Image 1: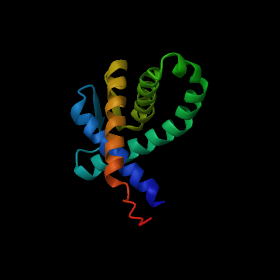
Image 2: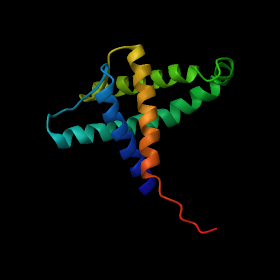
Image 3: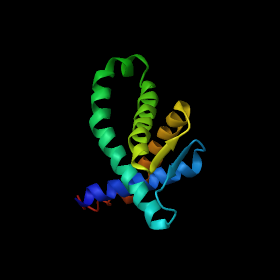
Image 4: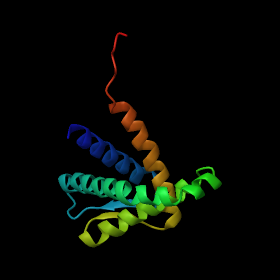
Length: 131
């Protein structure tokens, strides 16, 4: 459970940094206060985790030949489409992720992936084994 919460917080923080860097990606909260904004980032990170785990896994298996043919470059398109799916799911809820277009989604997914990886490195427990 602790690992899940850490990953959720890391993804929410990476999403926050992504919205600061990428002009076409933003988060709209239901209320303008800080608590609502933090909860919105956490909920969007949760939706992104579910979409990435369920839909993303299936798409990556089905599109494996395209990954091989493009040397993995199609992963940028797939991740951008998954981010657009998260925006589409969270939109009707009255809060959520707003992406201005397909290429903003691709750029946002790339930046989100980079910062999720970086923040994941920062919070990874250090292995102090003496062997």
